[in-house]
Length: 231
Image (tube, rainbow, N blue to C red; front, side, top):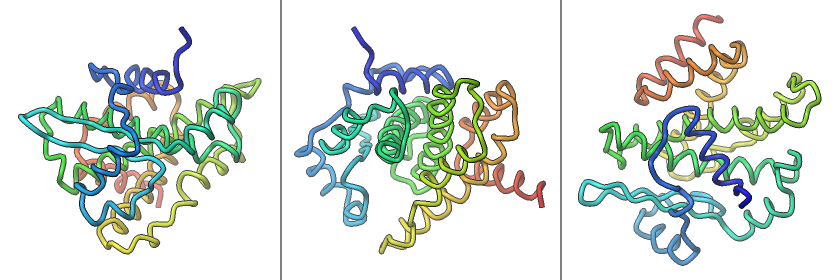
């Protein structure tokens, strides 16, 4: 049986970090359930994308996860499968697809490690920062796969950074908390991935595994300290 794009990405993250212990595809929900959970999530959730979302709920000391993708997004990925090539036609859909898998996986890993305040702002910002970093690295793998030399040019990196970081518009959020969340995490992720680009493969793997184990405050301090070194 052919693996789905979803399962391939989950396995990639698990090889990089740790096994989550569940098949995250079992957490996929339909549009109706997404609408119900969006209402429960509160007013600020109305501003989040309707194309893809991850929902987290804690009950009886267990973590419940729901991952939603709109039919439109799935159709885009089926029509322009990134496994056949990455382009302006599918990169934005792939970014959203990867980020939601990443949110679910790292939330589960955090929960298993004892960090269970899933409603706290630091927990959410931690997931967002980690997802942007990991998605950048996944995009690099997709680009490299289709290069004969498997070398990534500066033009490739600028293109990826435009779609992942520069294209975001945190100022568009009316909710000040959401605006601050996405502004800060995008700036941190952009800065940190510049640092990762300077490392060789082995050193990069060691660095991102250490980075994942940190809470949000420590991640933020790590990125800021690295940025100060280059000033």
